[in-house]
Length: 334
Length: 207
Image (cartoon, rainbow over all chains, first blue to last red; front, side):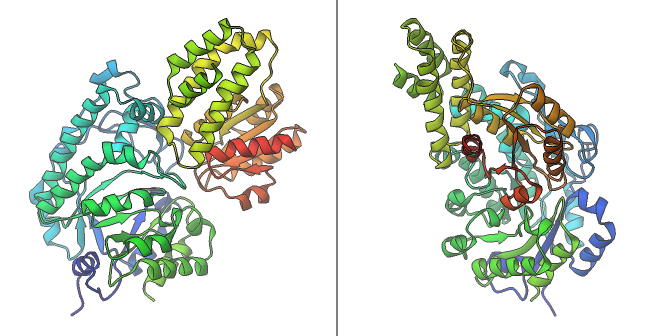
């Protein structure tokens, strides 16, 4: 009998030579709008081995509008996004907390803690797939939504007391959210923050270690204390903090490998952390040929696979060609 | 004194920079020296440090804010002494695209390098770029796009600038943009990141 998806991912994360590389396709709304039939074919031919558990919230999230439609969307923290295009998320243009005196505008979305654990567990028991927790733990990103990126970066340079108070409130809430998910039968907890620009970190590694590494330490510890794996997503160049994430015990990292030196990543970190994708969504998937995409997949495998440690993830993102997304999964099966 | 201005700016101390510019003016330092050897020289150093990953966005932003504080003190004297900017740059994020973090950073660094910035914001049409470039006699039209679906607007804008017979050079940048794409659509320049944008604009205007 062949291994289940859950077993494959476990073997991948523990470098125990899975029978095949597990796969996962992330789909931006744009792809479903522009290529519904092609997307359905890809998903039927290459079903995901990892899925995200629905939260089954007992209390509705206090959001307004649709994040993926033109117009405005207000997230559960009260941050307003503006959007012009269907199928992608917009940007915050007017930060909620432009002045610290507006403190009371920030609401902690406690309704996110109304996850129906019983239903989540039922969901987990009905599938053989590897299950990631829902939730949206993203301290750096949410701080940018709340303060606006420019204000937040200046806060990080000047470190006013109010920043620490905001971070403390947020972190306390995120810990509660992760503890809640960790008490369910999901296989892994998940958190995300984009830490890189095209070729460097957004903040210095030193500042990151001082201000943010302790937050991730807590998140990863919560996962491990409950026997779960810890998964993280980040965009951009993040090579300089990879040793820290490994030091914290992060199990799988979804990162833009093609912003970094993939062979260097392999030489330094393969076998110490699982690389959860991705294949270049900036240039290759929208502008490359299927053959170039296959070559990229082979390159990633050669550099990063060590009896496991690689999940064949990619994102069907804005502008991506369906034939290239197909080529990603065909190549992982070679 | 000028070294003190540079030092305060590199530490991002806006009140200190403003006070030092006041002091330099009171001591009758030439306006052009305060600008070029104090503020701009410091921002050039900062740009280089940013490019070399010696400083990062937090440090760049507080220094840019300090630059603005110094410049605000200096501006009446720049007008009085008829000191012109190095060039004028019309900048914006192209139509259909609301992403402006990168564009704002480029505008900030160009301003710090001594250019006059006309920031058109986001979701900017070709017509608006052309009108602003004409009105401001822009030396540079700078285009930003984050999305693969909106970067195609850049071609239209390049064509519109050429058709309008403007003297402006067009520089493009943004996550999906490449040098090949810049060449393909006939843009004059391309910058892969914010620090390089200043170098690229300077290079193009020196031609």
